[in-house]
Image (cartoon, rainbow, N blue to C red; front, top):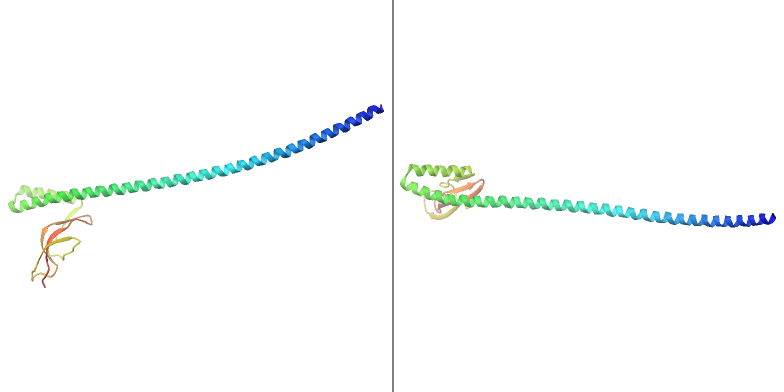
Length: 188
């Protein structure tokens, strides 16, 4: 029995050593797994930060592109408005040359029908924001007048428009067509 006790004691010692080794190995594996988990968590945090930075970059990029598109639309709108205004002015200038011819014809013939047409032309012009301005008797101003001739009229002050050869017109606040005038260059 003694032998049995010794055998049993040896067996228990061996078993305890194995349990101790297994326990130590399990602790090492647990530490190793905890280290791997910690590394994976750090990697997840890095990926989350990268994702957030990418989202922010995308949002910034999208906002910048949206601003560019709005600016482009504004430029197109402005250019379109300028083109419309340019074509409108050219049309009205051509229209004015027809009106000039009708007025010349009417001044020579005095026809009621032509007068009615001329009046309709003026109504059309007013409806489009065009106004005729009178230059005779006013001080010459190269912003509104083209001096085609000069005279020496002692009865008029210097730089006064003595005669209007062709009428000038405004569209809004802008000159559509300058008046062609005769200016008193000398005088009192």
